[in-house]
Length: 184
Image 1 (cartoon, rainbow, N blue to C red):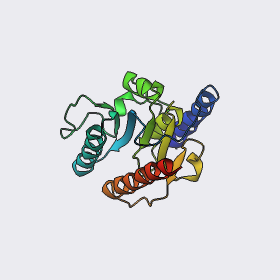
Image 2: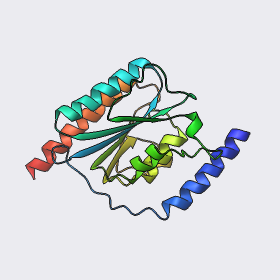
Image 3: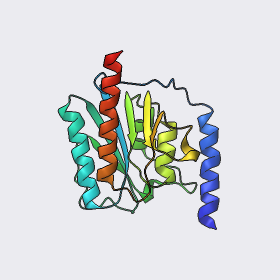
Image 4: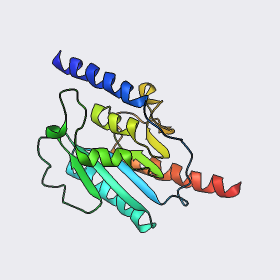
């Protein structure tokens, strides 16, 4: 009961803030992109390792990457080693209305990344909030009919899809965007 009230309050404030969001969506080719934001929910060590490899893939291709992880615990787990490109927000950083109130989150939303990728496979209001209010030029996320208005490109994967498979699908589609834009 309390959780649903918190969620309704969060959605109310999200809708209110979306009215003020100034963003011009555009398809950005992976090869032409310079900055990439990656948003994810920290769940377990194996998933974290795949996300680190995904960030490294972009960095190896000359991209500036900023990763923001939502930790579902009160503290950042031991396997989330401090790294220059990675920031976190925890349960302590979530307000009564489920809205993140951390400076890292605000900075991430205000950054106009060429591409912002939400790696959240299951619905999670704090990451949905960040995705919705991100000022990125091209936003990618998992398909969900309620979140269609937040993303420019969505992948339809099940809730049981592993983060490894999700990242594999994303990498595949990013390569397709490269080929199609260079053929034109």
